[in-house]
Amino acid sequence: MSTLPTTLPAWLALIESRHAVTEINMGLDRVRAVKERMALAFSCPVIMVAGTNGKGSTCAMLESILLRAGYKVGLYIKPHFLDFNERARVNGDLASDEALVASFNVVEAARGDTMLTYFEFTTLAIMHLMANSGLDVAILEVGLGGRLDAVNVIDADVSIVTSVDIDHTDYLGDNREQIGYEKAGIFRSGKPAICSDPVPPKSLIDYAEGIGADLWLMGRDFNYSGDKQQWNYGGRSQRRNSLAYPSLRGANQLLNASAVLAALEALKLELPVGAQEVRTGLVTVELPGRFQVLPGRPTVILDVAHNPHAASALNQNLGNMGYHPYTFAVFGSMHDKDIDGVIKAMSEHVDHWCLATLPSPRSASGSELAAKVQLIQEDRPERTVNIFDDPAQAFANAMSRASENDRIVVFGSFLTVAGVMAARKSALH
Image (cartoon, rainbow, N blue to C red):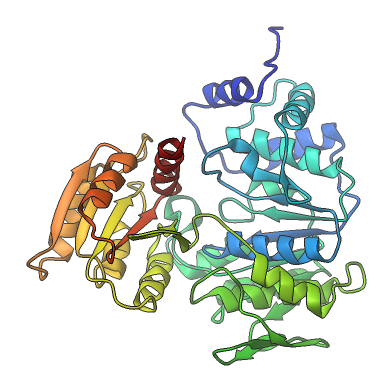
């Protein structure tokens, strides 16, 4: 038996090296077996969040409100931008390297000869860390799909599906009915199952009803109304009026916030939350890389929109921002995404494309992206298209060409946004 790593970077390198080939390995039998050997269980309410888009925002709002209410909150969210520790938050703080290493050791000891993917191994470790942190509530974001995601070896007390759209077609299916079925896999019989998609797939409703989950649908069991100043939530037995808009910008945030308040209504006996805590939690919530507008000029927007549904929301948000003479796009994508759909959704606002190859074997090359842009956006005579080896170079080019009244939107894969975040961080030091 070789000695185990003692630092977090060494541990992550080891887990990555074990699974260089199969990044995703669907099925829960292996994870469940290791979970049982670890005796992994939560002694507090668990809220699980799945969906094509809006998962991160929903988790962040839940965390913000529950922290304001004085609860000890654990949050598992992914992927990370700069540091792995971003995936595990306890009471609003990133988990320490030492705590993560200790949990990695526990998973390794329980694993025996069971092979786990990087995602499965790290998910079990973070859930172990949280289950042993004396939490009042745990919020777990589902990675891919739902039914076969490693997080789903835990039974949630409340499950939320935010939106159902086309993404990860290789694993989840190529239509909303198939994908809805996968997302609904996080629902449990007798437990609140909340869906904030205004037009939920029939498969999701059928699945929830088939297992006897307590299904909460937007428009039927809960809803929202609002004007320019404030908004109101109405649930089954709880109204919350005169709420501030969430500090997260964007068109879909009231759908996400309504699902958050439905979850809190469903848990009101276990985790009571006052009106002022809801207001303050919504106003102070932060989430990097989701229509994040950076201070300074030119205006820089970071958004991890990597499918057409998210890109059209981003496009709508750009349209609501006021006048900018030119918009530069720093864009990179994995080649298995609907790249044409993303470019089409964004082409209305983009004048200059800075296209980046990403540091991943799954990346579409800058030249592939350029060919697609040329086909889709032929009608804009002053448009420019440039290709770069990485997001940092693409961003540097955009910064050098943009005037202070222009804007730069960095979007696409997490790796696009992370590359620009890292470049900005090193420039500041």
